[in-house]
Image (tube, rainbow, N blue to C red; front, side, top):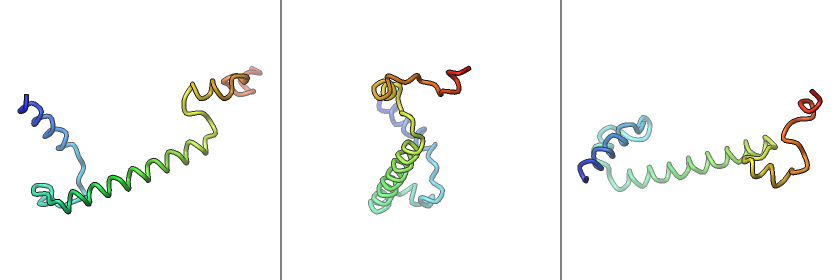
Length: 86
């Protein structure tokens, strides 16, 4: 089982794009400083992604989930007035 898990990790790691993140040498022999740097970059990217998704969600002015629509707009049909008039 351990060999299988290690093989799966090797496969997953091989699919990670490292261009611009570290050198091949650093990848082969990572230091604690490199790992800390990558963790910080990952956290920064996650924040940027979250902020972008929130911004897009607010700009769309539509619910993210059907449940949100049903709970907030139960008196309105789930289509535009133009579609209702067809």
